[in-house]
Image (cartoon, rainbow, N blue to C red; front, side, top):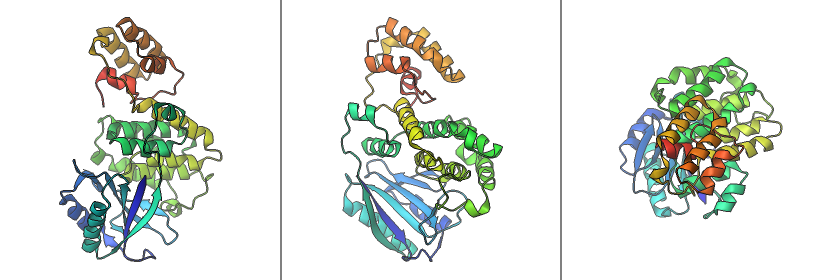
Length: 328
């Protein structure tokens, strides 16, 4: 179960604070580690937490942290039910004292504290799957960004501007380390500039608005909550149910919380070569051949073989390919 501690200056979001001093304050806190320009999560050995900085309108519409918010009026701590409430309260209290604001406990949202392998295989709610995956252990930034890139990639035809379609490419390049996150500021700005000004900080857009998916892409670049806006982008479709189903399948391709131990004897030169070529060329039709090579090397694990021989969808970050290639 997750729950929120909201820190703000008042119930009407009328009080703002400069973002930069807060970033410096959080960076000096031993309980947190900085994962991006304005992104913070729990330090090693601390209860799981994500710190979200935002600008919020009176109706509750958020623009999430990122590089284009020099002033904010709300900070949220996303907390885990398995953590010590007193630890979260103390952390929120120190932040509130620094800002001279107040902390309020927000909504609790339930996810399964224990999900079986069968339940994971049958799950169709990508947001729930992501939250449960976070509650189990921290997912790598690379895998989260690759999932987000694959999810937005399925929606390229709906992005109205070539600058936004370029943004999806860069999202994957950031995940792969080809482009540093700090170096993609220009692309992020272009994704934003292609959204009409009146829609840039609004959560009241209709699900059929052509700029909704683009807005979620922009927030994906800016937010410390990686991949969640890719999931939210399905709200930009008249019928997002089918896309949520596809995203659930992509999550099962990229993440397998029940992955078997990979026997190094399966990692023959042939298997590595096939995995590398399939990964680089996105030649997912070669995955059944990789399954044959692993099987020839002694692999009898049904999860590995059936995933490679299955219909997909597949994407970079595939849990079997990552095991063969030594990626995480």
